[in-house]
Image (cartoon, rainbow, N blue to C red):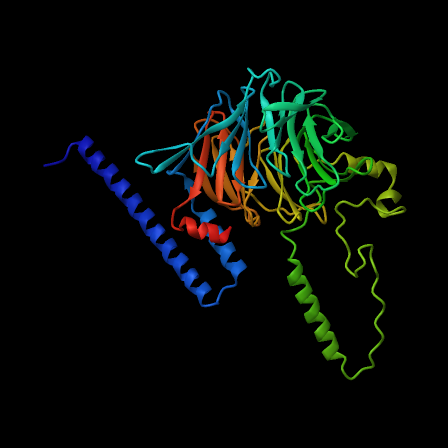
Length: 476
């Protein structure tokens, strides 16, 4: 007797589900065995502590999935445009949404539990919205923490205002009136000499707002259209990177007038530069070979090594320094300078920027649906071929990068895709949002990914629970 089509399809679905569960359990078993082997190697002294920690964290990142034990209860009634976990404690998540509201969540301590205590619910502990007497009137496009502590946070809105909030009293302590819609704000995590908020707006000028004085420090002119995204360097407190609707990515030393570098997509190099240690080792090998070859010859006195401004015989990075007087850039014909100044990094607006942790590379996303990796020492496009993606074109997107700078997380319409930074290969696709994803933030403390979308939801992507909480405390 032949089974009915419905019954056979049901068996097929049951078989597929069982196959998936078996595959998942086998993968989890392999990961668990690998983890315990590495723990044994660490106990035996075969692996160094830093190497062991980085391997465990890398494994956790590779096992990210939609969390089934942590849930963020979003109070927002509009799309989530910005997310950031505080940089001091790694405990409080700040969000900004299109309904002009901002919320703060305690991601370490749950508000309550459901499902027999298995699912931790994290509700908003502090919120401000349109009903606040000094709240924003239109969409909040950017919400960032004050880098030093959680006592202040900053919001930028389409109502042309940047507001600085006291977290404890939820009161506005400072207002900055901008010339147009605010697309993105940023503060330097390295700054010890200034308290500046860089603001990208629909105006062509980048403005620096000084929290210390409550006034504008100065403006940076060079873009020919609105500035969609801003990002501070992770290697210098004085270097600001901006991406505009004109397709240009500009580097500014905020102590001087004018930008000192404009990235040009036609200037390229193949792949990643060798690490400093590898280059120094190669130099040692070449020197030893030359010495061994000339053992019987007279040894010439070595020329004195040139001293640089840092007091050592090592040349400093060019990022953050203007060319010296009479340099090649200044000797160029004015027409050539004009061509360089009009260089573009993308065929369309630059919608996202992210600097690697070591400050040596920059990732950029554009409305041309391209992701590019730039070498900041040379200013060249590395030609890493990121797989084709479809990106939003009408608004800025917030990229995230893992702690070891190995993976970049990119909002690609309704999904978030993880790419290997150095090869461009896609390693993961995170599906869970029903509408476009606008922002994501990677928490290096817990190796968790937070994403916000136009479906008003904030989703948590956590590693599989193969490692106990005690192990996480040991690693952090």
